[in-house]
Image 1 (cartoon, rainbow over the protein chains, first blue to last red):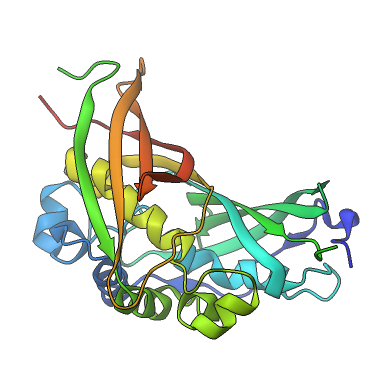
Image 2 (image 1 turned 120 degrees about the horizontal axis):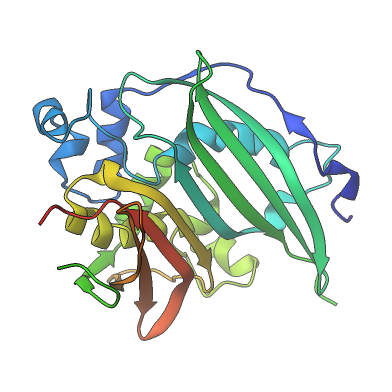
Length: 149
Length: 135
């Protein structure tokens, strides 16, 4: 089943806030084997000018994953998740993401294209504070591989 | 002096199956192709592969270690070009290089990254915009 092209422009609005904790940042930094003290030590982060420990550049994937899954598993979207591969990913940090941030994520479907039997779906997740300050924009291209001939 | 072509210190990052299990837990991406050989082979892969996001997180270490402040990374994007099979026993080794592509008027620099495993490119269009280290 092809991905529904009328999906373009669809917005999956934030359902609940994500609270960024020191412990989740530490867990993520441990998982990527990155010993940078700015991910763990508040004093080290403050010495760099941050109010609290800072998140690794790709940490927003944790914050946006729930919004992404709402797209992947939206019955109206027609995405076969077992055939999904990650094509491209980009993060634009409007300011450093730090422990203590409470973020709301709206996800927008930017494009749906059919290329050589595969469906390419681009989505944009905008994470903002509850006060409306933009923090990070994550753009993701997924490829839904077509069935083999 | 940072100018176009300035090389960032290259690094090598080994990835093991245990790393992928831990990344699955930390990231919430429990797709079995990252921990179950049977499932990976059923979908045509040679075996368990690394999360693309794990490779992406690893590659930017070349930038954050150079900049000193991970919060100095303003933008970071990649295209995933080839899966990274992670053997058991053993490890896959991601080799990452970076070089300054552009020094912008606003003081930020654009860095091009290369990431290869066994000589094969696994990330394309890998680019970061970063506030460079002082001095």
